[in-house]
Length: 211
Image (cartoon, rainbow, N blue to C red):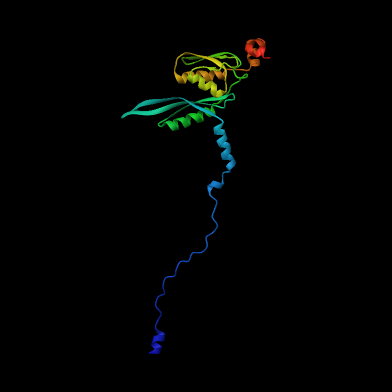
């Protein structure tokens, strides 16, 4: 009896428990790949530009089954120190159209020669059916301009100027003509050489008296 009990085969063993050992060191996330200094630089770059939305228009495209509506945004970007750019963006939503316009405006920025607080000489420009005249003004005059022209010259950093918009009143054409006129401005020395006259005759009258 005792020998039978001693020879009885052992039953199947129970399932072993799963132990949990100490975890390994955690890896660094993507947050550490980018230094904080780059983020601050990008924020400063965004803050130093004067961004102005000039016009928001709704457009319609006739397609099969109806009309598809979208938005066209005209934006001017400047640093208030002689640089300005124009951008036009189109999208189904207004924020996306503004984003596209801002990117294009920053890529197409031009340098505007400024003498003190005004432009060095008078310029007349025509774009499509719009005509724009820009004329230097004495210090303290201010910006004498309409809404779209004012936004462009103020973004460029011009504080005293006389302007006149002739021809078409289309906002996009007027803004294009204004940016084109600013791009045609030259330094007094360059303009005097082109005209074949002394520099004193090209410079504004009040700049001569001020020395």
